[in-house]
Image: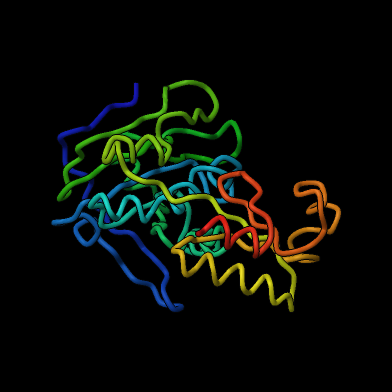
Length: 242
């Protein structure tokens, strides 16, 4: 049975991180003392659920967490520093911190180190999230102790709803563009001026002409989507923002 450790101190460990080609030791105190920190821990870097949902959503909602008084969002995994650094780059997860729990010391201290030998992973962290204030766990969301890799309560939206139920969440914005397109530059400028973060997909690098035609009904660019709705090109975006 996985233990809920609300009201207890987090483990006192040292994370061996790699910064600018140098080893940098970061202690639990460095992360948690006199600070409000959200932690989410997961089985492994580059794994499907962790890469497609868990990390991206925390990264996307980072500004909402900050407005709610959270000093840092920490992702932990039983992987080494080189893997975690490369995963952060691949995920473009620059709004959160990815710490390597290479020896599993933190996960073991939390009672969350579990065997994943059936899939060749060795010992890994169970999936959970927690709110930590000045080194003390205030709230934990632990995935149910079931076979496989359940993911239903340790997500970013659940944690944000606990911390700030009425928080305004940033919109999901995607811009389909191509190199050398002046109207694409205009659209991106309009979004930036309005305070929108966006993901840019570039023709023949990230998508094909048939792909944009399939989702928008046209091959012209830019095509802007906000929260799943097609806004259109730069003129339509101007009208939307006004």
